[in-house]
Image (cartoon, rainbow, N blue to C red; front, side):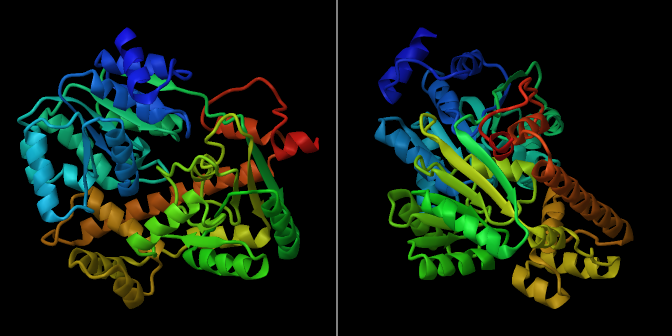
Length: 464
């Protein structure tokens, strides 16, 4: 490991590794298939970037996050490391140049999106060069039981096996229950896998969960928390709530605010994120679109204005705070009965009849715009997205015969998705109403057993 420590010092300026990093890096350098569960802020990137520098061949990092790829590559280039990204943000001629450079072995690390990885040109090139390993970032995305399932991730696992692209797969995530971990290992066919599960406990983050009788009581407490924070991230359930709350706080409290959701244009999201990062705005209202891969070191408070949909989503969200482990941070989930009702309404959707489902599928396969499909069939964005995910996971094409049996399978899968979502929301409600240490309940959900009954850093333990 001496060369690893020298590389750490040379490029990152650290004299020693953080907890668990050395063991993880050692196993990756030894060529072992690896599943790494590392909490947000745990120094994940170094664990695959450093081995890439001291290994022969190219390390391919598959990430669902364009903004993260660009940030990571910029940071690596600033250190003098040959790295690049290949995603939809590049113009065709730019992509062509990157592909040529990959073929000429000019990079040690290439970040790419799932869709670019599956492109014919990319696969043709990487089959001809030495690949040291393929890294899956945010690997929970390939699990149907995960909170952020993405079918394209699942397809890539199958492709790697079929094409025999490399001998080592390394998978990273911050949030995976034992069920999700098992599915990841099966899908990626990880033989003799090294598994590292770091503690899920973010000790420097206060976990606050508070129920209110009235919306006014909730708002007054919310104002108090805001007054004690310097940089606050506030999660809301819908796009419209982020915009409404941003305008309200700006107008009434004279706070510099911004909002961020998937409906904002790409350049708008990028500018808002940068404004929040550099301090031009001190309070950001966001949906879960502002999530994985966001690395802003000085967020000191995360507030859930509405209920999240699952414990995984909640844990990922509060992990945006306290990236500097030496500094105490706070998280609050504030709710009343109307918030429970809102999330129930989002989940308790009447699924379309088989007749409507058939028409929706044909519209999706004909590449009609999502908004038009929603309006035509009076269906929610959640339903349309779920149907689209199922079709993608089954490699469905325009020519696919949409017969009774096919509709039946899609209908069953759709029901399974929403049943899973409802179960996850039940677990979250239990966390909220649990009469005991919130941290203990949260950690045990992810399979981490702690013996102490009082953490002294959650709303229940400090009250009792």
